Image 1 (cartoon, one colour):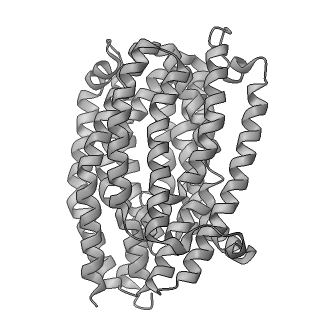
Image 2 (image 1 turned 120 degrees about the horizontal axis):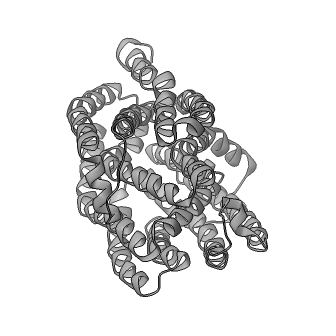
Image 3 (image 1 turned 120 degrees about the vertical axis):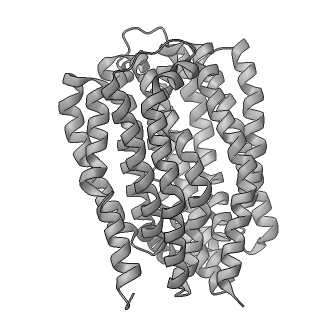
Length: 437
């Protein structure tokens, strides 16, 4: 059996099934921002962005096992070991149930805080009731979502991302319809419901489809064991550290900007980061199915395929990264003004630092996928976290003096010092020059 051809076919299948999904997802992301700002106003949208940054951070702990589950199922499936697949999924499922319960408990404690608005250093309690309702809804949605996300990890492990892609395409269409409803009932809580309920339902359906096609992974308490959990946590620790670093780069600055300079500036900064997310979605279309395929190739010692895949990714996508960077630098102000539906003024230096940050994270992302795929996740995340630490240090020094310029300058320094040069060097040394690998 030619596994190289099978692997390439599954990647093409996943990419093709993602085209419609990512297209709808891009439309959804572009609509969420202007419609949310139109309904809530920039300041209240900034409060929403700060709240969501905190909730994204809360999802880091369960990602320890969900990220590792995908790779471990790839390995078990490559060896046709159904018992291991069952043990892996059951262990991850019950561990995640416990984490979801703890998250729900913490959220309930937060809800009972009388001065919830002070957590975000808001100047008045005007949004306190709206915030309380939104946190209450998220205290229900997020724990359920934590468990349901395991379906995506498992489907990725079986290299069947097209199932997830198709379901998410449908959910994004529903999100667009829900956003129209938000216009008639503008609140942070209604925006949370509109954006998060459809994807959650899609993940639950995905879980049911997974169990129907692979009934041996139905969670059973007797299949869960400590050794498997230790293996998942040890392997997934790198992904969790990556999530922490990602929070430091992409979410914490939203909270910092909002707390230090006001909710309105947090809304502007969140919009700028959303543009980066949209610009990077094209890359994720290809890198998302590539990670399990790289793990499969690594398990089967098919390093020639890995070399070929790396050359293709670099040569084909560097032009896109450069072009997108130039577009952000030249048209960034116009893009933001269109998304926020009012004139936005940004310093030229801020605009180009913003564009340069996109270039750095896009280049970093491609190389990280290959390092993770060949099993060096802990080494890669150590470098990433070091860069995040450098970024946080400079951010607290520069933001009070330079504002948004200080934010983006700090965010650029992190990857420049830690990853954008070392990642490619590490990949080439291991894949292309070390014959013993």
